[in-house]
Image (cartoon, rainbow, N blue to C red; front, side, top):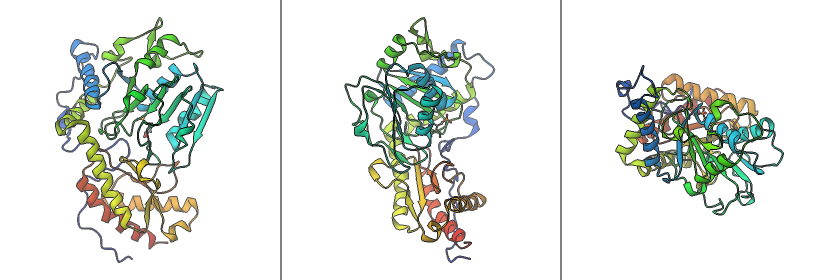
Length: 387
Ligand SMILES: Cc1ncc(COP(=O)(O)O)c(C=O)c1O
């Protein structure tokens, strides 16, 4: 038994998953009632809806007008793989990895594309690799916000203006919640299911003019499946970037994405979205500050995520356990909250150090994080009492 009193109030929405992330406040299936269903996505109206999704994305994210934006298959993973397989091999590659997803891209580049001239710049969970060591004569592959460690780059200042290589950035858990430096990014990817709480399966691919130039002047030595092909006879297939998708998208998901974009615009656009995530993250960091049993995996506030908040349990009784038992402890704590309906999906990522992960992105409501904090204390003291 524990002397921590069970909180009286549960978060109004207990969904704190890091993907798919919580739907926007006020969302309901009613939002989808006008979805363009049972109609061809290649009809005039179908294509117009897809183009609207592209145009509004560009508008809200303040993407430069000479950049191209496409809706592509297979979520963020599809968008990243499409970029890696279409563009790499022309130069050496620097891959930055500081958590699971960056490591996954590095592994694909080395073991699947089998490129030789690859440098892996790596850091432990909670840290960033040495950004000054990046060689911008190479193509540079990195993740803006490491979702599984809660570490992000603070800005794009470390990226050379006069780079020869391309920057390829997986920004799926950053976009719509953090300021991206578009002029430093040649390829950027994200998926609908993250910061705006959209649905899975659809990815976004954003290309700078330099990325397009590479596509039109370089042919990789390996075969490219249709699902990855962005050029025809050495020219960019421009239609993909105005809504003529490579294959069939879900128009139900498109409707949902358009709904989230309308919400984003209504609340004040990108600045409002970023501010929401910052305020949410502040609720958790205030609690961490006053709570002895918990800490951030990322010790430096400048590079700490405001979306995927990764936490470690630093109580001596827990730290004395084996790594496996620490993982089991975090899981039990998360399950206790799940059973109470106070928080869903907050166990740390399977490859990350044991701990908890709370999503604080733009669709999360600050009041729900406030309500969650006492539940975390309650769950910790109940779980530790079982040791
Ligand atoms: C940084 C990062 N990259 C890639 C992915 C994979 O995204 P998806 O499942 O949308 O392809 C995720 C998902 O959590 C992620 O956080």
